[in-house]
Length: 434
Ligand code: HSE
View 1: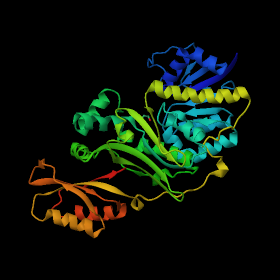
View 2: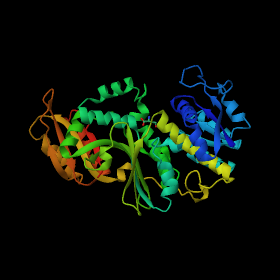
View 3: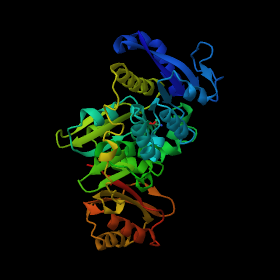
View 4: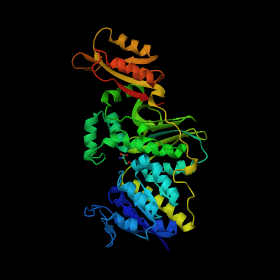
């Protein structure tokens, strides 16, 4: 039987899971592939931590160069994460004619242009199914299954940590800080949760999906990103009262001219399927001209789900090697020369409905001052409530749901409102996504 030789760089949760799945399910993989996947090297600076797996002598190494220099290795699996030295290792591997599989969405989101053009130039595969949605096969779906479809919109819950926190806040009435601490204690959230809770991880993922869906490079710095750390229990309760659930959404909409790409918490109608994707689960909704909505739901993180997606990519490459073909599917879905430079919309250009939570002094005339400013900016109020719960010091909370409005007008109005002496805190804005 033929043998495809692999090297892993990065022996953490995913790297060790890939190795375990290869050991545990190796026989089945060989049967389905018609060849063996043989792990020749596993490199990491830390090879002493017990990862629950043992290797034959010589496989574990602290030298990534042993993977990159090995003339035998066909596929390099990059699972170290981060920008450097991951970028350098991936570029070196490809320049040496090795195919690459990575789960590194941050790397692809920021250095995609360089990496994809290097892969094309070297004539090697660069696959990354595990980078978005873990075990959800959304990359392959966009690149291959939906190749005939003109994608108009992608809407994803692509961060399990944030979804877990919002779900706990919604279902158990717990405050953000407490849920985050519990999630960290259980290992669902990183010790430094910034990328997950501030929406950066979701933005990396939607940047990658946008490139594949519309055939464009995406300037990461131009993506509007807002996380969930400002969401309070009051927002969750008001959302429920209005028939919504709050989700951290990664959104990418293409109207044929420009792309509206953003990450922020959003109120989603409770009856929508995506509003009911809870806990650590991820979901990606795709809307296009051929199907109304297609939603893929599954495990977006964790060693085995992510590891299985990595091996799926390895098998894809191995099948091409065995069939003697390459370049069958362009790494970024479109051939490099077909890539366009589609402009990104500024957040101020979008239109939608808004939830606004004001904390104001409990005085006569406050309501009319706020509604007056909203009116001056062409913002029409759909509903206004004053939740019973008061805050200390004679402050009250006022909640406004608007009709369709231009974000630019909303932002201008909030600047004026937040400068009023009767407003005690920065107003919370949550966009409504229907
Ligand atoms: N940290 C991510 C999440 C998983 O919480 O979903 C890896 O992308």
